[in-house]
Length: 434
Picture 1: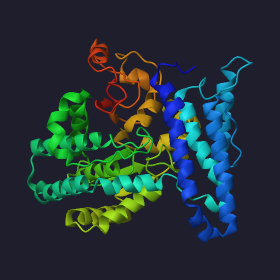
Picture 2 (picture 1 turned 90 degrees about the vertical axis):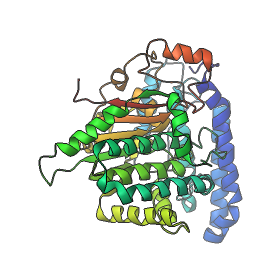
Picture 3 (picture 1 turned 30 degrees about the horizontal axis):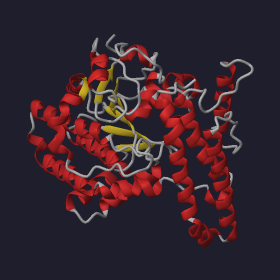
Picture 4 (picture 1 turned 180 degrees about the horizontal axis):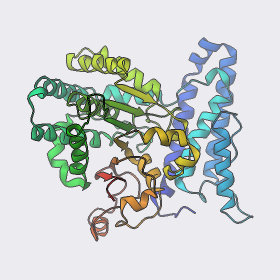
């Protein structure tokens, strides 16, 4: 049961219906496009999809039972199995429903049902209902993107002469840029503009007090030791980034990835995105490719230079993109060895995994009401395929690994500290250092 005073209750009661209303409006506004591309069949598909989404909104607002998926996609069986598992945890008289089931599950379920509404109407299968919002967010962040691309280009020109201390300073700085890039989350703003308008580099120093946990030193030590202790020319240091939002945040992730390669702190970067449109602004392959293309064709030289290098990295296999369907299942990450052992085995090849953002943090920790002081390792519940680091601005009411009294103190000074994106964490766990 979701408590009526909780952030989860507000999300399900207010924010999710707002997102659904925007989705319905987006589909309706594209009616002429569907007609031009698919004729009358496209118009009928649009009507049916809107009908299904309107029904979904009504189910949500009236706390109806969660229904099995019927679109027959490869992940549907796993979703329906998860629903059965939720049912088994309840009394026989009850069914899993919007306000009586875990928030994490129901929020994921809504996005999967939106996808189902389109999949059941074939001419619209490939339509991304969130594409416009993601595009607008990228365009609105142009000045900030130009600033960080200019900074990176200037950095790359002198990086060859850097000693370890200089490398470390720049690494920590770019990791913070990627951290605060996570503020640009359209699912939190219900699709409203949440872009980065200003140069983020100028505010990093003033934001440092808002980083509640800063394990940057551990991350740096791991990478620099790997670089120094390579036992052969063929040894490969691999860093994985489990992506969150497209737009400005994705660019900050790509900037960090660029630096890791140029500085030789990493030899390969593996990006993990979503296989379907998800949580409004989450990165899909289409978004990833679109941003690389937009960067290459930008009128600003630093942006286009970055875009050209990044496209080369993809072609050379220095950067690799994955979109395993597990990332859009409702499961917590501790389920991965059982539900997606192939993905778990892939992540075990990594030297370091960055998990971006709130949804990944909620799935890492199971979205439970942990005590603030419970250790990150405990909350991971043995999900430790490799050393991992969460880069997250807080936008959901869960946080572990704080010092005694820290959470309580914040609750007094800033009652909404966990949900407004003002605070952040760089939180590290290494299974090889127990």
